[in-house]
Amino acid sequence: VEENVRIVPIAEDDWRQLRALRLEMLADTPSAFVETLQVARSFDDAEWRWVGTMRAYVAAPGVVNLVGVYVTPGCRGTGLAARMLATVVSWARSVPDVRTVVLLVHEDNRRAAAFYRRSGFADTGRSEEYPLDRSRREVQMALPL
Ligand SMILES: CC(C)(COP(=O)(O)OP(=O)(O)OC[C@H]1O[C@@H](n2cnc3c(N)ncnc32)[C@H](O)[C@@H]1OP(=O)(O)O)[C@@H](O)C(=O)NCCC(=O)NCCS
Image (cartoon, rainbow, N blue to C red):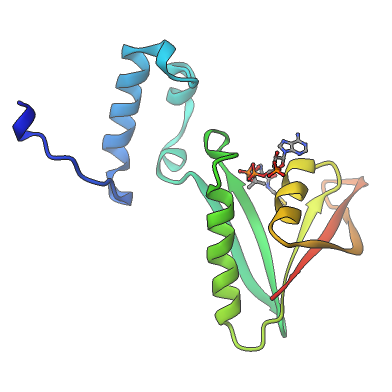
């Protein structure tokens, strides 16, 4: 069998096979992994397919807004978020006349704020009411390009 097994990098379209193998390995050797079969089974297709998102758009002349930042828990603390952000920043730099990337982060979201700060963002001093709970605020951070 061994010589018939090809070792290949996986691509985006391979997520179904990845899911099947992941569920198999969690069932076979649960103590080898920190994720349980039960948790892995609860993921929907989108979670298998995508492990994170970041969206960015030109919001005003010279300004890119970064929104929808998410990395699935199992991939946090791995540097993936930094690589995704680098891709966004490099896109923002390629847009003519864009000088800043701005975002809003909930005042209690210390992990995200630490991530942004380490990535070069700084508080602008501005904040807005958090729309889903007006007693809390979202703090604006900006990265000069
Ligand atoms: C925000 C997010 C994308 C960052 O990615 P990440 O992989 O977690 O980021 P990192 O682990 O590289 O960096 C987070 C930093 O916060 C620190 N941190 C972790 N938990 C923390 C906590 N509870 N309080 C404060 N800081 C914390 C980490 O140590 C790290 O700092 P360091 O590099 O100086 O050690 C990810 O955490 C996420 O998807 N969170 C849920 C969604 C979210 O909050 N989105 C942001 C909306 S604005």
